[in-house]
Image (cartoon, rainbow, N blue to C red; front, side, top):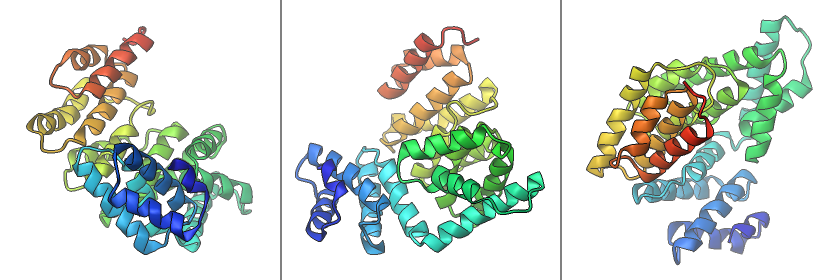
Length: 281
């Protein structure tokens, strides 16, 4: 099923969409979600299909699945399917970064790398592009410019760019987004998918939260998980557990790994971090 992502034939696109909304079985759904993600990124679907996919993602999230990547790709397609809007966003970030460093000339290479870091089709492409920027003088300027756009969007309750950009800031190796991430996770007015993305931007993030902050982030979601109100909260809790480990809070990681009320994947993540990072204080 996932191999169908490489072709743009209409009957294939219809079949994948049908399997996302009404799958034959669990394995077919897995393949359809993966295929639809890549099809959206490659422009195989128009806006109306992207809306159907976004709604299906919300449905499967409610059912306990975690198609976060597909939902985000659908929102990215709906918001940034127009290349002119992508260009305007990239141009703004590049201009702000160059002004910060006192550069006058437009840098096409910088724009290309920024575009790939935020809007690149492939996960590896986004990772490598952000890491490349992190090794240049543009690391902090791009981080600040991107953070400014994130805050502007959130003031309008628009999660789209922030959901795309928070992981980029972590990969850049800056910490300017830590306060905003904390605010997002604790604000239940944002979508669960967005809060989950925020939580997963914390592992390996520059900077550090004190242990009481981590406990205040974790506790409400564990309560939600225990009530069974949001099965997909398990992935958010796992992201928090991962961040606790990479922030070096061993005692709290031990608690998570041994707490039977925690989601299984959170306990496993905490235990893995304790094994892999034994020198963490």
